[in-house]
Image (cartoon, rainbow, N blue to C red; front, side, top):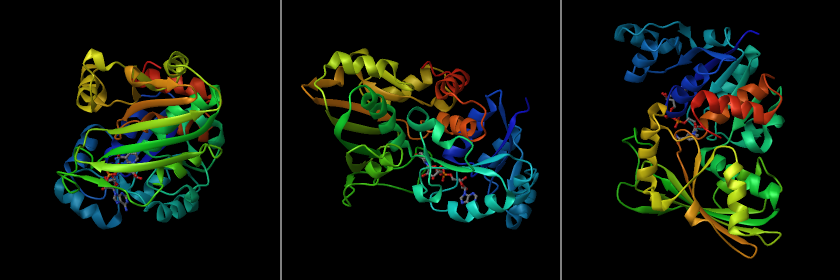
Length: 338
Ligand code: NAD
């Protein structure tokens, strides 16, 4: 069977990771990536063998910088089955019209609204909803984190309501423009958009969220409070979490006290860019009292959505009908154990 041909629009934090993850699969391949400016990332992408495509207006700048260009962004559309759009939020609408005109499929990211595609994607919760679709959207890093743990719990013991507080990293590590550098910023418009975003995949879930931006770049941290329909126990919930895809239980007592140590774990595991694709739950921080469940989880915002993009390509391009089979295949290629 021939490989699905994939293009990446926007080779930034998410785009470069999705490009590498797609390259590791045996049923899809990267045909090209787009860059708007001839930055060091464009140079390295070219050295890695990715075909570089740029807007017409930037071609001269790339030529002057000595970075070989394969063509314009629109020319890339002619050689791909699907584009993974990793441009900054709210740019998607313009590109959607171009993908539509070119007759190709496209995946958008969490910076776009659900209304852009009408389908939002999470591998565990709703893989089949994107089956054969022309457009889908992989939900944001925080929403992916909430879905990874809440969906398996809800399947086992219906959730009556969930409340999550998101302590958000201010900016990504490679970004020197944002803040706060020294402070905490609550998101005062409540509930924050994260709860409604979870509902774009689990519409029946009663969930509300609050968020605080913190002066850290490494990871997000969630505190989650869940009311279950039936009484449960800490052991029962841990049993569910231990078999939930892309959820990793750690123990604070083993030295993994916080997000700094978790990023160190990513390095120790020898992951590409020290990425931690799994949602990290502190086993010793899970507690059930009657129907109430409490836990903490950490989200590596730069990478948790990466395996979901690979699975989303498989669903949209009808490469694998079974969600678990696609999850296992992606996991194996990326070194994720479950
Ligand atoms: P980024 O800024 O790191 O990368 C965006 C890339 O797109 C850059 O290379 C930029 O040069 C390029 N670009 C900008 N305007 C463009 C245009 N008009 N056409 C083509 N390329 C353009 O952004 P990111 O963090 O990778 O985010 C991409 C998407 O992924 C957003 O929707 C974001 O909300 C979502 N997302 C980000 C994170 C995260 O933590 N970084 C996590 C999950 C989802």
